[in-house]
Figure: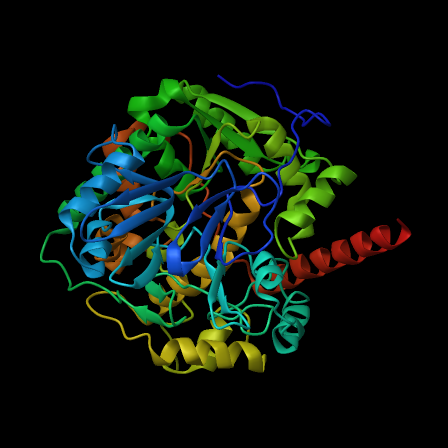
Length: 506
């Protein structure tokens, strides 16, 4: 059944800037109300009171979990029981990293042992970790680069800002490749890397698995079981709202919720102009009516309230203005108590650059060609950053360089920043595909099963869980043609100019 469209009333829920964020530093100023934990020589952990933090010690080490771990095989297990199992069963950092392979969630994990301090995060790096060396030589860490700059006393990086100014005229949602930031000396920890908090050095710990000998059906069966288990685990932690579109990714996520369909809701967000014409506004309602799942259609206003706009600007450094009314609407909808569930990360396995990398002239060792995949060509800053990433990005097994590039750059930078922005509107952002073992199984499938528009692997997984969901057509969003993309870019540029003029008038 479908609820009527919902508009966000003003003033019902107060936005909390820096929500679910953390810092690791010495004696620095932190936002009011934050909690602290002493880390000894590693400084002090400060964190927003709604961020889940779990602290477990054994004779071998002390483990601190920031965020939530989800166990698909034990959905009933909470953070403490999972972390206690890891701490008791592991003796080294490598053991701890391996122990998270089958786990999902959005988290960072700090290990203190033998005078060492090491930090790593979830498979796709969705719990953002920014770091820099302070004037005293200590390594400071923060979720957001703006807060990092404040506590570490960093100066702007003019080269990065010049790149962003140029790139944002080409695309609406800018992001930085590699590990650089908009402040000099600041970096972001990329997925599949760990950070030494004593030296500030990072080390790659994963670059692919040996190609499995299992059949495609065995891989898809395992992936299906993990996906449904992770959603059951998430439903034990918080109320869930599935972000539903007309495409494959969200349909796959919904199909894995069949056993918990009475405990979830689905929602779609569409501006008023798209309410009638847009398939992402119309098809989800039909899907949910057939599935017996509650569906809500959210309609963001043309512009946010001044109070929320101010809070969002404080929440993250240089947020995307076009997100602001959406975030205010979703905050009013969730009340900060519901977790938003998204199918993001699926693009890693769906051959994101198919058609661009299969031409004879493509060379995945060339940073300029990798930059062109993400429309960063002709930017010296981007090509240099991608070049540094490529130098240490060897791949193993069935994993390809373009897939790892999407995983660590597009997801690790663009998507993690989006998740950080979304934190202001939701209790948590749940990405059920954010599990290394699940991703490895899907990446091992033949390309013919993963490519769009058919997405045969996702089709198979949906049919095996909730086949009735395919009674409503799936609308796959292919890459737009060049003329269409240029028209879209022109419209977005015009909107940015109009927003800028409106801001100046204020």
